[in-house]
Image (cartoon, rainbow, N blue to C red):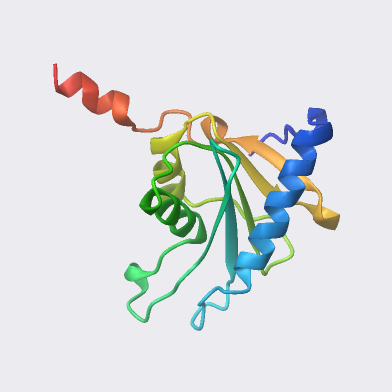
Length: 148
């Protein structure tokens, strides 16, 4: 079970999370989900406070589909951005949706302390951290040990 930590978030930070959710909802409209009809949008906050969006893209060969979170990360990295503060994720369903395991691992690569923002009831942000969702993630530090 995820612990909701947004209750202590105030002011500009909560406004930033609301803005990220807004952009994630817009990105969701571009989703290509003809098979599952499960539309997802993501908005990534970079280290320079830029917002990069992504949506899920399905494929008839299901394993080749890509999640919204990874689409946003890959898009940001392709533009030279490699540090992310937060990501917001929304879906076409009424309940909050969290990044899958593969997305958590990809996000971990760029900032294990990143905040994860999902949309709760009434559009209110629910904020957690990637470390809470993936406490023992595999990252660059694990490979550094092998190179010694």
